[in-house]
Length: 494
Image 1: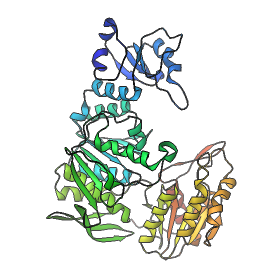
Image 2: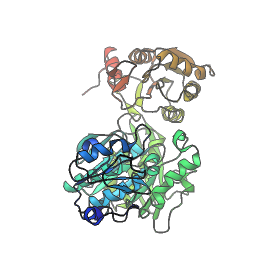
Image 3: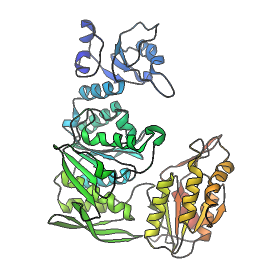
């Protein structure tokens, strides 16, 4: 494919010399270290580095030209192509270079504050139950046709996303499910894509350091439904019970499926049975009714399952296939994940690391009618200090016992972080234990637990490390909890 073909339809404003326009492009790159002869290099302005600083290196390694929204450095001697928006140009060029695979692969995009990861796992499980070869793109990991790949971002850069789609297509895959973050929408990572199905879960306070206001945060989410450089989705699946969901503007070309627990939702759950062993309820859609069973826990997962059911319906999958896919999804790493060694109390690990997420996790625990909720959590270092007392107050006001410990202290003193947390905890009269060693804190929680209690290990979820000032160690809440339980003589029966 020639340079002029790759850049056709992109917002490149520079005139391209005829000899350059006909030059073959062998690849696209935004990382100069990966440039090979014949590559087209994209230089972005960044928070930590200016891509122009690497343009000369890209040229030395064989790049035929550089595309940027910024002017060329004074000493740059190669071809420099200006564009109105660098990331939009990369997205459109990537789509053309890899053959517009979004027209051959059915894309499902999931956006919202909470529930994206779980909903993605559920949808991917339903598609696999239907016999599809898939890719799942999200916060925890990328799953490509059964192969697990590390996740760099919740939603990768557009070029990396199109490469994943190309690999899926090469393997005979037909469906891609991806979490679409507000950052990804605002930064044009999914620009130009044609989505078959767009899902909206909910919107709560988050990422305001980036979006500044809830209205701007919502506007970014809205882009998935009106089309971000591409057409609107064929189907829009929206949480009817969420106040922001009801504000979503859906173009007339999109068919809407509203889901929720209220009567004005099109797809609803009835006769919900919830416990530590999971969920069971009836899905109702017009005259269609079918039962689903899931090992997932809590009311929030009723919403996630309904969203996944709706997505399955947009692909005309049968209720039997949808129900089988829901039941096959055993759980999502670090999302209210149970640790079961046969103990008479519950132990769950959750990624909740903001005050809203912590409240939601404790609410799920409360919905299971435990005798007590014991919450173990800490706050990360080198991050927003103002949320620490807010999280402390949330834990103290909703729990029966709080154990404040370390999360990832990074370069900060763990005791200082815990002091910040305790400012909020002290606004409540809840009994509190302070233990900076996270493993010891988990042991204290097990020592304190009695039959019928629930221990919530919050903050780290699926993470398998702990970051200190001078080292990073292996640490997995799930592994530590299991080891502690076994040391108390609990053993899960085979």
